[in-house]
Image 1 (tube, rainbow over the protein chains, first blue to last red):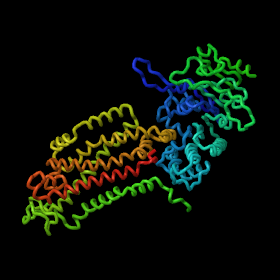
Image 2 (image 1 turned 120 degrees about the vertical axis):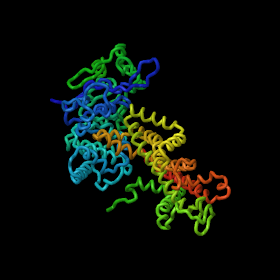
Image 3 (image 1 turned 135 degrees about the horizontal axis):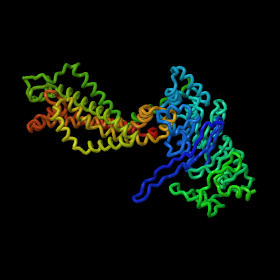
Image 4 (image 1 turned 60 degrees about the horizontal axis):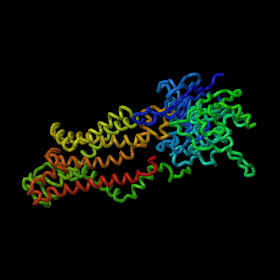
Length: 327
Length: 289
């Protein structure tokens, strides 16, 4: 089956300040990442802060230019499109940003914000556009009386609804969600997540869903990739990932999900130390400095992503051993 | 309709409200408004003529016929101050507009596109700002001829770096905002990103600078005219009225010929500056995010 989107060897390096007499260093925010997303599915990407999740998302849809690699969308490599071709492509690919307090132009009314994509891509008359704006507002649960208000008059949850209406009004095929609920109050998170789930069904959307919250990802996603320092360390179907974890880092993350029951004693794997500096990631497996199973080999050779079970890939030399040792 | 009136369009209302709290600025605005109305309409109403010569009164003090006296050639001082106000205010405002028109696009381009345009525009601005501008204006005014138009254009064009640097600086910060990225994400064309997203969010400091620039242009025009290089008689401006004060006998014995023009000039510039302060305080909030 043809994948809706396929990312191949995507790289995004940020040049660090060059020091005199030293070679220029790069922060490898996204380093050689490959995955695919099928039509209608929700693909989750998890990882801790600074691991390159957001960069991956923005590089994939070319809001930042990739350093290398390609992104196929319906079989077309969008990484090689000209800026103008890319601009036209954007009607099929949208993004929902993390912080609805920053992503809405404070000088535009709700109506202008939601109508903006139509003004760019639609030839419809002004009345038809307004009809679409109203139906989009209804779709995301915004009262149409709000249309002349400015974003700062809304709560975070409502702002994110405005953002969603704006992203979906052109009926895109693919939506990147860059931690869409992490800036929201816990009380409205569930509402927004459910809204996104409903809309996915109604409009047959495909999501790339980025989050650091494993319970959110588990709720929403079909397949999940785990990132650590710019690389994917494990990809699998949701249930496979949670029940059949191979990579030690993923096991750490999963064991750290809080369980809302004071009776349950948890055996969380607490990681030692901090995330290494992305300027100078450790040689070999990036995770070996914190991995309880690390051996000499881990510090010498980077483990390539390899399939350990159908649809389940892991980047760890000892994935099977670690798994069996646990069982 | 159950719209909460108090909240709707509240950004503009907030600004107006904060401005109204600034008493000095409100007074300044009022004063300037009256002044502008006066210099436009009073001559028509009273039939003032700044050029007609009263042969009965050369350099006479205030009297019934000449409220503020006459100058050495017998022209009515009151009429000349009103007409001078027309010229001085026009030169001030127009040259600030010219600075704005030249400076804003350049600053926007430099700030938004960065790269080569940034280097070219900003270094050019640095070069312009390191000229001793008064000398340059003197030279240009004498080379290009001393008319009101030349003065306005020269002062205006030389003022562009102020605006360019201001809008450049705020563009640099606004272009990194997520809403600009969001504009790109929906496929907005570059010129619309600049016009609809950058300009409205980056122009608060420009509005303030515009008032200060106007005040400064009025002073520059007056200085030039005082030196005899600006607006040429018989046309009147506050600056060339002050030119009379170069004569020691006028300075000492005929204060009606220069004191009123000097006072109105100072008050006007002061008021424009107060107005600028008021606008700055009104705009200076978290809303500029």
